Length: 278
Image (cartoon, rainbow, N blue to C red; front, side, top):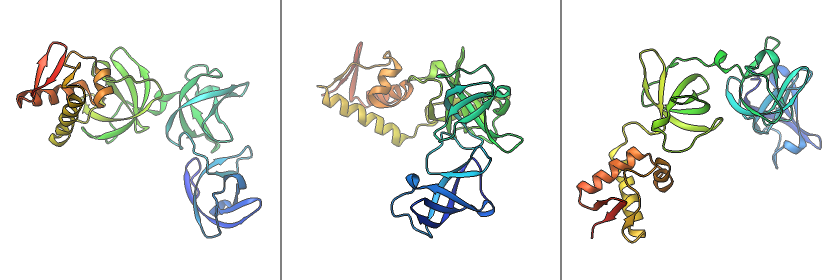
């Protein structure tokens, strides 16, 4: 069965100067334009394509990558606003329609917005910026320490709201962030805790940093010291972004690794950095 608004793997029935004919099952033969056909495509091959609907409501295959599939959320640019509603660029030839009734706030051309992809009552692929209508403050089967995909949504007094796995809301606390993030950014994160009220606290750090990984960070610090005449101008007072830029870890993990090296007497702590012991 053809999945509208999603990726499908379809069989190639025939190829020619017009393009390729794909087996659309109950929807019949679907034409993939020649410009989108991979080289050496032949009858009998299977090809992954995204299926969207044209203005007549008929399915159209494309090898172009959509910014999001049905049921997902994406950060999209608004490319047109008219008497019908707004239209967003989601990577396909046909822009995504966002009706006025599905706009949390009036949209304007050239701006970006977080958009949920859904099928309307007529079965048409449609967008909505009423994200709270679709995304809930509940764990939805999430577990503490689980790795998740995040889309940064809004900045709050406490930090940043993020959409977890296109399904739930979570919160990244600003005082725990060690690198700059921005609205619309897609990043990996972890479920830090699920609170009694069902809300989800998030972290960019992997919970329970393993000893093996800690040893790796400590080794990277030692290597950096050796490459810099035995001194690094980084310590527990350094800004988190500087630490992340140097070692790709949070300030908390850096301090733990430095503490381990200090206890092993491999480094000395100074007011403006750390020094390799001879």
